Length: 476
Image (cartoon, rainbow, N blue to C red; front, side):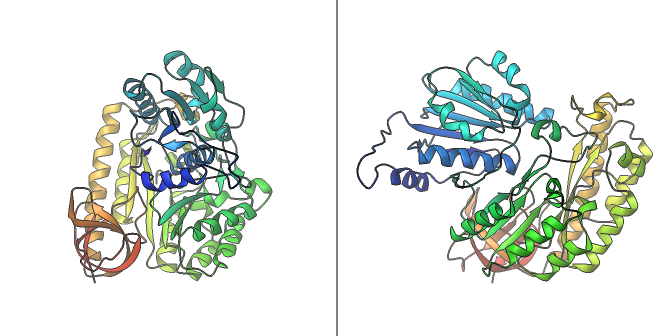
């Protein structure tokens, strides 16, 4: 089984069928022995990690391995770690400890991903129960890692992985949506971030490869394709392209494919949202009017200290323009409280911004002091108690804003993809409209789904009520 931090899983029956396709070649010359061949994946962190996990899964399925329904019955366990923040590293080590405690004694444990890339020596020393360490840029070595007859390590200077050519990938998301990674690494130098150190510089996938994968996903019946990168707006800049021209050209080529689909963009920094890009988003309803635009703060001194490329005036200007040009746009952002030197006045300016420029979704984070980041050595580090107090106040403010925004949705009729039953009861269903990204935003709770014939399909839903983070509706 493929266990996900995001709560997603591959269907066992589907994967068993896929594995059995490779059981014998047409000439009968190859036979795979499935005994002792069961694999179990755990993928932690961001969607880019998830795509890498799906590639590794595809490689092993093609080689004749089959999926284990549980960790305890697996012969091989692969953990794809995240090393971005202290909290994510703790989740990674906690997962390693849990797996070592739960797996059968003969099972082989392979650990890969961002944390391995940065901390492989520590992991090797701290957890002798790990059989093989694989770098985050060495995804294609998963078969060698699994088949190695002794403990080993393959951590090269390649910090990130991008598919090129015919590399197998087995989707682990529900059949109606999938992620499409168009770039890895980052060219920005935000003071709080270690992504460039972990994932390396910006590396864009070729447009030809992206379009090939895009069409393959559509041919597999995927309806919602989510473009992902550290910053979509930087796509192609490592190849000499300027502004958002690389992304604009890519989107225009995708829109030439005359099929019905949703295209969602994660993530776009405010300085990358150009008039040209807005025009493309407006031009075709298949691009979801959904903008995940990390701004991190609103005070100009804080933005400068964070080494951000935008000012308060720039941010307000782009939000205002988006609301004018695309009235139906839903905006998500992320904010950091407790960055070194943040004064009470600067924090209150942030709170006031949340009130005056209401955004549909805000992820609020307490500053994490990351070794290797520029801000690690900055003076005036904020005490944890102060961070917690500011975090709670900002969250409470956003909850009040969200309640007002949700109330405005009541009575509206929206297209909703119905994804399945509510985990607590089959009397309710769950779905999303274009303004809700999988595993990140709230959902629509369907309290009347009598007209739903199949999951993964789009239905007209009337919004009838709202809870703290979710909407409530009935299928028309």
